Length: 114
Length: 122
Image (cartoon, rainbow over all chains, first blue to last red; front, side):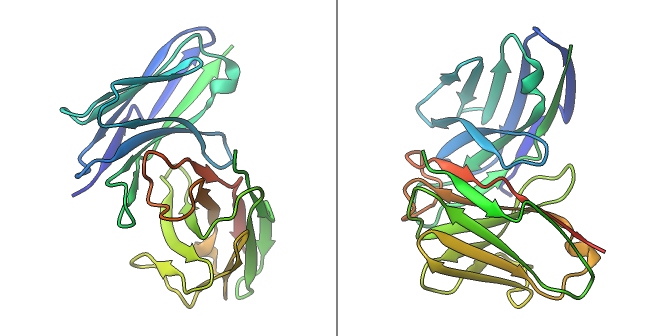
């Protein structure tokens, strides 16, 4: 069964600290993996997109890694800011064709305290 | 980049009434748009795929007669929740892909989400 599991479910950190969010998936075949940031009451916003051949991709203070062999991805946030408080969602696409589907994780709720 | 807007941003209605939610692709012609529903602390769940000029494709378990989708133009898709009930209260989000054509989530396609519409049915 194609699934995307994220951990932890929630996380609280102090402003300025780093953190790492995890995403494990069983989706097969695999096309790409995306990380989104969703502020409360808003639609998700894309952070990174990685394909099978990409191990890491950065977007400012966000760095995503992908291990396609173990089917694991992580999102590392450096020097956290209060505005980083949001839900971070991992999404896996099973193929890049008209038959492709997206599988969404439940997200990790990050809270950054001053 | 492509921007997707939704209207209204929130709506409160009585049980039994119908509610229409609009989704607009502001700077991109989207032949395909997607409607999601999200319950509190849950992931986004795809409800249906809206296809311009043809019938929408619904996910298993989603009643097509209850959630009417119309994609009359390349920039507008509407979702109408008919005879809404309290269990329909949720956060409804639409999205499209920059490529628009296959909209399958290929790595070359960036998915843009609308800001969402929060529906509360009393």
